[in-house]
Length: 152
Image 1: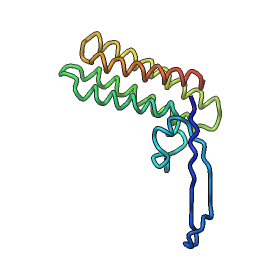
Image 2 (image 1 turned 30 degrees about the vertical axis):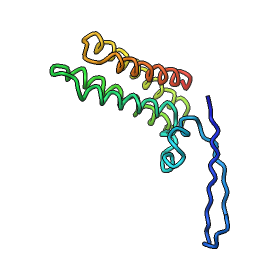
Image 3 (image 1 turned 90 degrees about the vertical axis):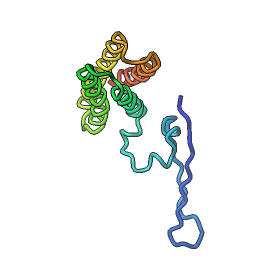
Image 4 (image 1 turned 180 degrees about the vertical axis):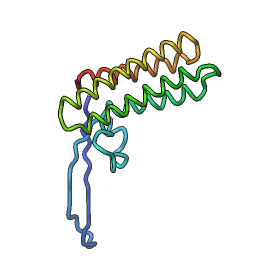
């Protein structure tokens, strides 16, 4: 669902109080959630819904691995690397010149997101994450995978 947000940019170049510039910007629902001021200075890929959702998932991963009990360092490392790889590959794909190169990075990001889902399954079996963390992670990954599938 897209939300249209109208942002009026008012610039007074000569300081006389008269408006010299009036621009309208159409933004996505995610950008609306971030707020117009928060998107200033962001690169284009950082405003992508899929990137924002991948970042949200990565934040969840950091919360999960920060409280894992001793003996689960390998699981924490694998999940963290895969989650960071999703974010990095989305960014890298957005910076590629050809559609084929971009699609290849999106495929890699999708595969890494699937690996993250498997890691959550393992952690759930080992009872080292909460049901709420598992559900939230699955919800975020479902969106990431769906969007990446459409992008490929």
